[in-house]
Amino acid sequence: MSQGSMLVARRTMLGGMTSLAVLSVAGCASYPAFSLEEAVRRLLFLSTDRAFARLLAPGGFWDDQVTRMALPEAIGNRGGVLARILTGPIVKDRLQRAFNDMAYDAAERAAPAVTDAVRTIGIRNALALLRGSDPMGATAFLHQEMGTSLVEIMVPEFGDAIRVSRDPLVGEVLSALTGVNVGGIANSLAYEADNAIFRAIGREEAAIRADPRSTNDPLLMAAFGIK
Image (tube, rainbow, N blue to C red; front, side, top):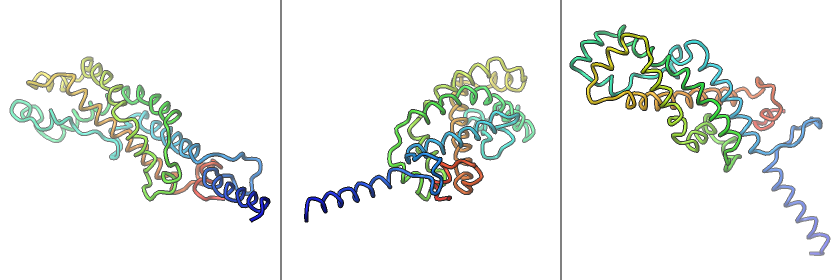
């Protein structure tokens, strides 16, 4: 093969490799090329923004079956005195709602941490995240990478909320618990809230994947093959 032919072949190969790493908005010269990694970040930014908009609305956790938090195990599995306090589903719902309402401040504190993680996280194999079969794949990746960092942020918020709660039922329940302190309840609630937050983000991601055109975002539409 001549030197000129080898050069052409090498350029062709590099061009093919580049096409796998970079997307361009077909037919829209006014939009710049962008990387697959940027597309994943854009997907997560929008999913996170929509999720927290729902969660930080009135009743954001309690009114949504996807994000409603269960009673902490330390409370839900206790009998004896506690069973006499939680006499029926109405009382249990009231206590559960009180804890769900406490999640507002915790989620508000957690939101910037999620945004920062999306901005700075190292995204491996972006193509697989975009083209994989899991409609919540990018969210699952983000949750795995963040680990328990949101839990650590939210525990103090739940602890403070429990201590200053004016709901007499919360005070009565805490007084009846033996061997369980406020920190333990706060930790349990923080784990519940962490899972609820990522369920909410995942739901928004799945909705975007199902209808990329609704975002009016040329980057995301191109990433999911919409021209």
